[in-house]
Length: 295
Image 1 (cartoon, rainbow, N blue to C red):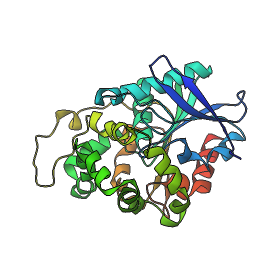
Image 2: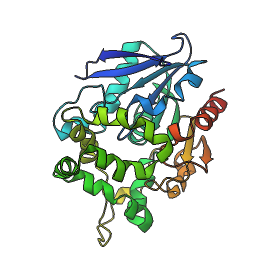
Image 3: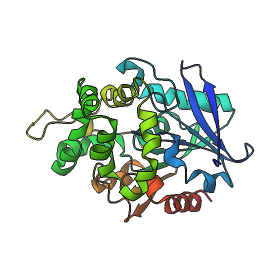
Image 4: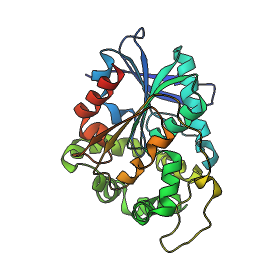
């Protein structure tokens, strides 16, 4: 039996989200956003710990798993999922809340917190780079630039044909599984393949990358440096916890460099024994870090 209930919630943003809910609605609200290529199940082993003292809201984001999959790259520009999470909060009827994000969910959480300090009281980021730090690193750090070349591949409009040719199972084994703990991932494989196998889902998941304004220069390129990378950037005003799996091979630890200047009220917890998918590789450590900080 799951430790949460699932509800299908239609939003005025034009999508219906599949949402995991757990805990007492009278408790402080906390919203959990997953990233690529996952669903609310990113948090499956963190939700029960949080739900003891919080009201937990964990949607499948647009384009993923059990939620709506609108067509067109333009449906996945970052403002759209930001609008979704605020509309979801309105629908549920919560006031200021704690927002948590991993991977793409973290990218959306950074943006939502910057733009909506009146709604988002506290911010928790799990292996998701600050937008300015990330873009700077893609220009200035060759290792991070190399680690991010997959984004260019994902943006290729023929990438789905490549997946179709090799099959979802091979894509899982040869691409996704290399970034996670194989032993932990193996029993979850059927769930991933079921989510990815829904018609059009690979395209809608990949459209998050295609809709992003992030520039990923080729390894041999020397593009003009955007002026905003060296200009003042608005600070995150909320208390912020950043949890980082230090073995992440896609988002390198350089993403923590310079963060304190952009996030004045910052706490960083490093988990040395985990990689990118730390929410389910080391869920007890993630939940412990969150609950200790939230107390």
